Image 1 (cartoon, one colour):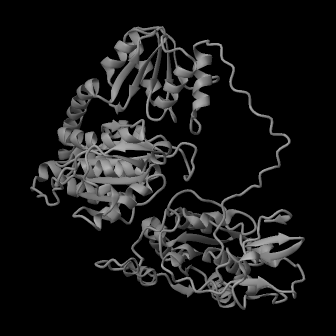
Image 2 (tube, helix red, strand yellow; image 1 turned 90 degrees about the vertical axis):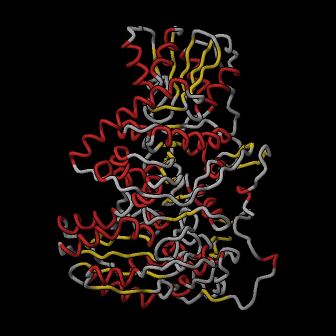
Image 3 (cartoon, one colour; image 1 turned 45 degrees about the horizontal axis):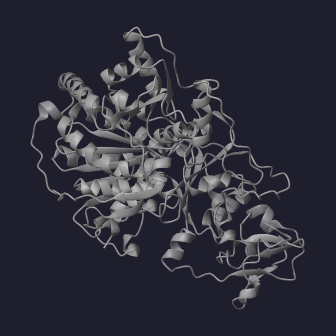
Length: 633
C-alpha cells in the first residue's frame, strides 16, 4: 500500500513537502487530479499517480498545463473535488483558461497548485504568481511549512466550495522540497462521479453572459475578503511596536531571526497565509500599533505595495519598507542569515554576523556543471547534426528539457531558449529574416505540449528550417513521467493509446520527414545532411530511449567500452562529445566502466579505432577509478 494511503489519524510521518501536499489532497477527498510535470511540483503528481493505481482517484498526465486545468475544471464544475498542479511557468500556459474560469466558477472544490521557483533552480524565470490571483480575482493561499501545506490544502478545497471559485495554492521550492514530520489526519471518502447541469447562460461566456459573470466574480471576491479577515492562516504574534509582515517560508526566517537577535519583546509579526484578497482591516489595525514596519517576502513587492496603500488610506505616516538597497532584493531565494541581517539593519539593532571561516588553504572544489548523462542519445544527435551542418552558418533554437544542456561546450548546440515550444515558433521567424540555416531542437514531450501548432504554422507559411524532434520515449527531465508518445505497457499499464510522432508530423503535411537512430552515427549524418539540404520544412525524428529510463526497465544492453593502446591522444572523444564517462589519468584518456553504457558513439568517431568493447567485466579493483588523486575529469 502506498504510504500516503495510510489510514492512521494522529500518526506522525516524515514527508517531503510535495508528499505532504499530496496527502493533504487525499485527506480532503480529491477525486480528480491532472498535471503537466514541472519541477518543483513534480513529486505531488508522482505520488497521486501512484495512489491512483491503488484507489479510485482519477489521475492524468495531461498534454500541457492548459489541458490539465481544463479537464480539472470540467470535473469541478460537475461537482467533483479536483486539483490541477503545475510549476509557475505552467500557469502562463493555462492562463487563458484561468482568467475565464474565474468568471464561470465551480461546484466541487478546485485547487490550482502553482509551484514558484525563486532562484530558478530548475526554471527559465522566477516570476511571482501571486499576481495571477490578483489579475484573475481568485483567492490565494501560501503555506509556511511542510505540515501547514498539508493542512492548508484541505482548507483550500473548503474555501473553493464556499466561494464556488477555484483557489490558487502557491508554494515555493523551499516548501516543496523540504522534509518534515507531518501528523496524519482523517481521509474523507472520494466522490468520483458528478453531474453537469446545463446552464448555458452561466457557462457559455459570450459577452452578454460574461458581463454578468464578472459581477458575480467581484461579489465572490468580497466574500473572500470577509473570510480572509478571520482566516486561521492570517495571524499575529508578539506585542512590540516594531512590525514585521511576512508570508510563506519567510515567516520561518523571520521567527528565527527575532529569537537570534533577542528582540522578542520589541517585535510584533503578522503572518499572511491567505494573501489574496489581503485582509484589509487586519492589516490596517496592525499598522496602527506599529512605529515601523518591515515586509519580508520573496519575489516581487506584492504585499508591500498593498500594505503601503492601506497605510495611505488610513493617513498613517509610519515607515514601511521591504524591497530596496540595504533591504530585501527582488532576486532569488532568501535565507536565515539574510533575514537576520536586514532585520537588524532596519531596526538599528547591533549585530555582528558570524565570522566566515578562512578557507584559503582548502583545495578548490572541482566544478561540476550539469551535463547530459553518459550514453544520452541527445549527445549523439547533436554530434551528428554538427557534422552534417559543417560549412553552414547556423542558428540553433532549442527548447525546455534535458537536451537544453546541449548549449554547454563542447556541444554548444543551443543559441536561444525561451519557453516550451518556442524553438519551433522562433525558427519560423529566424528562417524568414536571416540567410542562415535554422536547425531547431525539441523533445518528444515538449513537442506534444506546444510544438505542434508552430509546426503547423511553419508548414502553412512554407518556412525553411529543419526541426529535430528528440524522441527518447519519456518525459525525462522531470522524472520519467509519461507523455502521449509513451508505450504505457512498459510501465505495466493498460488502457492508453500512444500517439505516433512520425504519423502526426506526416499528417500535418511536413514534406520531408526522416527517422534516425542516433547511435548509428554514419547513417544519421547522411540523413540529417539530406534534411538540411531540403528547401522548406524538414523534420528529423531522432529515436532512442532515455538511457536512465531504459536502465530502469532493465533494457540497457550495450557492452561497456575501453581505450586500447592504439590511442594517439587526439582526444576527439573528449573534445567533440564531452561524455562524462571520459577522464584523464596521467595524460591518457580513459573510460569509467561504471559510467559507460555502451552507446558506442565514441568508438565510431575515434580516428584510430582505439575504442573497443570490453571483452569481460573489469575486476572490481579496476572499476570506478575516475576522480582519484591525479585524475582529471
